[in-house]
Image: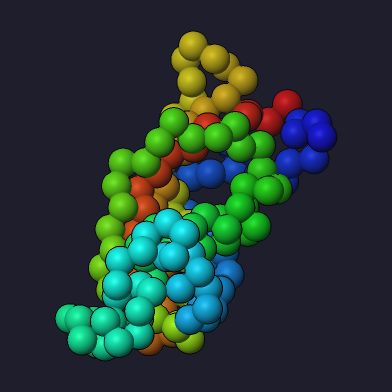
Length: 153
């Protein structure tokens, strides 16, 4: 696929203060347990009885599972139709509230800063904050990241 001919979003399309709604995802207990069993098998993620006796009072999603669900919405809602060249990393992740089975997360992408590259004029860097909010209006996770995007041909 030639990104330059298929992208809807280029570096020039991002600006500080911009907010992009990336849609929603509802999580099931089966997903929570399956993810945690493979990647984060702490008792409050995989064992109903242990989770009930924990400070959470029930099974909760791994923070990494929450980030993975957010990433899926970021890819589906933005990156798959952009000139994204990947990311050099994240500056911060915060898990602010537990994610439980049945929760529906809405993810928003907030552009915080943009900078055209001086050394590589075909691209620029976009700094962003991803925010996941549950159906009760509680912010459950934030991710501060940066991505590289091609400039418009």
